[in-house]
Length: 475
Ligand SMILES: [Zn+2]
Image (cartoon, rainbow, N blue to C red; front, side, top):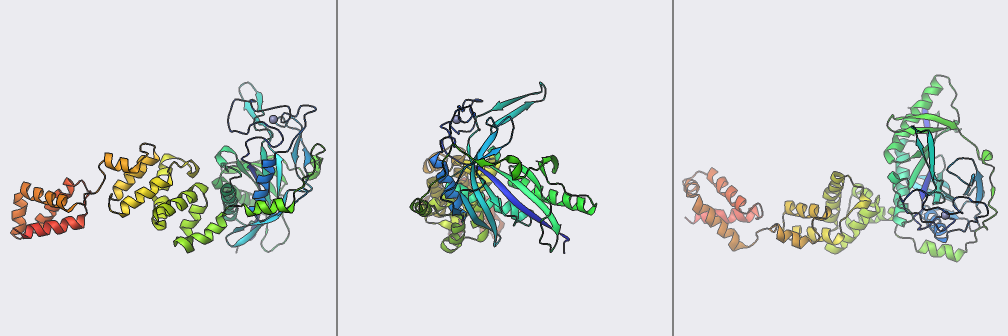
């Protein structure tokens, strides 16, 4: 039995997919020239007043409902003060006292990880440091972008559970369409709060926080490495210091950044320029009724309705693009098992080869359904089907049937064509025919090989064998 237990709580920052920022009309599009998407409001110029983005509230509420939270009808915004060059107002509009969503949960390996709250806030700008000139530049394009922060209770006990919790939350949010959840672009960033304690203890140890981790793999590695570091400190009789640490994925280690502030240090107070929200029960009920089918529901439905394994189901429902492709393809071709097998096999392998994430998938369900139908009808063989898929995914072909015709991928199913080839091979290799008829069975393989070659692998080998046997017996 291990001597120590890891205790982890997560803070997940998610950029909402609204067209404009949370308190002004500036665009939230990724990229763009520096400081081209900034105005007096998001740059915090004196006298500029915030106006709340209704869509951002709706997205945050949808996230809360999907994660089993209660919605605070009269949620309030607060100012969180700190000075940093990427925060021009010197305060961030956030929510401390009455966050929008509270008391939710997400299920991880059969256990509920409680979600303490989901609050709304605005993002900060971005600093770039130039080590050569020792100059720092600031870009306000991201300043004021709408965020939600999902805060879990310290219910997570391992690296696996931490990764699984983020994966589940990400799948739900991406299914809702409230965020693109692209970790590589920073749309979903995770802070890991971690402490260790003697096994069996109920008390929480002193925690360290690792900020802005942006891949699932890094989250798992950070939890494992920080657990080991804290245990080592304790064994050496050294105290754990409450601090914020920077996780360096290339080194596989974290280093101290600053001592961690408590809420008191931020001098929170209610934002006087924004009225408290006033959400009606009806409005919330309508939002709840309009939620799409969530990954958890699909997880239960797929094995029952389509006979898929838990493993396949899990992979499909973790990515919005994959389960949409699966459901539409299955409906179009009526072969859910084949659709799942193609996606789990060829499609994921092709994405991996191309180094693309599933959300960049360019494969219309119509095309995949057609490929599956052509193969199951025996029009193309596995190899031909695979070639057509690669051509569609690379943008080389748009129309599956056109590609199959242009590249002569169709199987030769026509009896007279097969018989013609048998005749042709027997005429061109009379020696083998004679040898076979003289009892040399090996010669059959030679003739069969030539016939398959003439068909370029596109004939049904079983039928071909029958025809050849028949023709040789006639002599
Ligand atoms: Zn603005």
